[in-house]
Length: 169
Image (cartoon, rainbow, N blue to C red; front, side, top):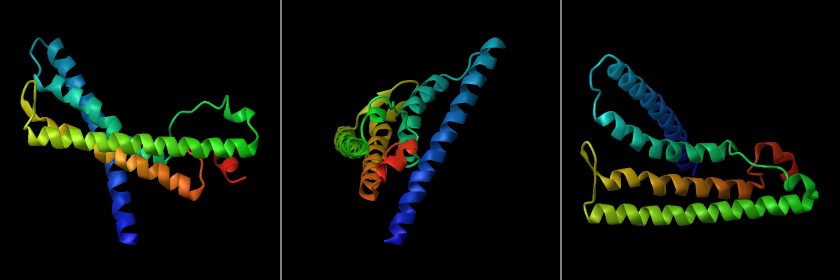
């Protein structure tokens, strides 16, 4: 079981690092494109296409890690006014809903990926990209987010970093 946990963690942290690498690469491509245009030459037509792909992939690669680190933004207006037992119940409900929504999106993303693969769908831009390659990250990302939310629920932790003390009361 430890080997599975270590492999899962490696995938989770690897996805986060890869998302960061894509972000830096996207910044470099945009900078290169702007410099080339200001020098009077035409940048690569692929810069724009890859930037669009990266804007889809970066959040998908980083989101499971963000759930693990409890880095999502939340508003304390409602939770701060509730007594501790109600706050704890609300946090558990939030985790259940988040896990369910992510599981449904993972299933739906998997279905779309499979259909795109079976129908040999292409994303036609500056080059033809098999659409299933782009969509394959969706079930992986949402599936891992569902697991992370379930992990928090089973450990009795809050999905919010600042509220961990409330979850344990």
